Length: 378
Image (cartoon, rainbow, N blue to C red):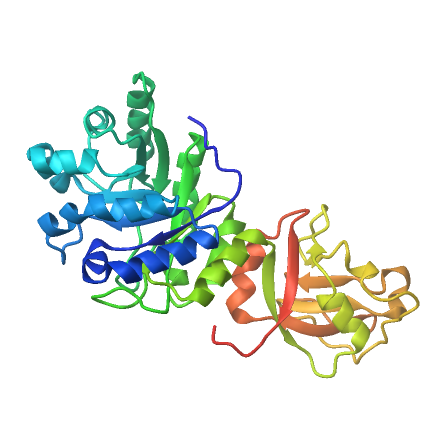
């Protein structure tokens, strides 16, 4: 199996209870998301607060709206609900006749269930639980798939976590995602919406706990920068139009963006160097600083960087070499380890605290850009 995804995909969530309460609003939401390039819709038939028979009965009609917008429907299902479907011909027929692109196997599924899903329910795509499956389980599924004549498309979708403090940590997330990607599966992760977060806790539905209170675009850029995500799904229903646009922009222009807290009274040439274009980290990384390979060309021809009062170069400081450094004048650096003051180096700002964790993603040759802190909440 090999992933066919070449760029980061986008998905939204619409829950069947919401559809039953206001089908028109759901249809309008999906139409707007589709116009922005969102291609996948996630829903669930095993939420504990929903009536299973009611929501499972709505899948067929809801799937028509998804299909009308040329989007793919993914339905989350646990083994408990799966057994109900298998033992009820009416439910079975309803699922078979629905436009379901993927069935997400939340927990409890066995490799032998896959054949029933693909043959009896005619569902040709599977999503595995990327947050909980261990390597041995993944390998067992892959072995089962290899034995099938008609192999389904398989992705791995992480959980989202309604309860605060229970979302995944970054290192675990990266390790887990890597297991699936090594086996050729695309990986999906969730970001929260702050517009109308889903109940009963209303605290957002992120995969990573660190993203619970972050803006959607910020969370998406970190997921992209991690290098282990192929698709980003909004866990909460009814994201705002601005959030949809921010997420679409993050995918369209996935360059890592770092927020800057400026030093006082920056010169025009210092601003040009900081914000005049994308920076590229030099391929020969230093333990002490991240050097921009492109910064010296950002100032105008003949412009010089005047020396400032030398200040200690604290952790995460942003510096620009001044005219006293000769041919290095104009080079921008981000400090990775505290360094002493140097009269040849101007301290022009620092990386905002909420973005310091993103520095781990600036590898050799990585592209990044700096953005002035606009005072928005972290």
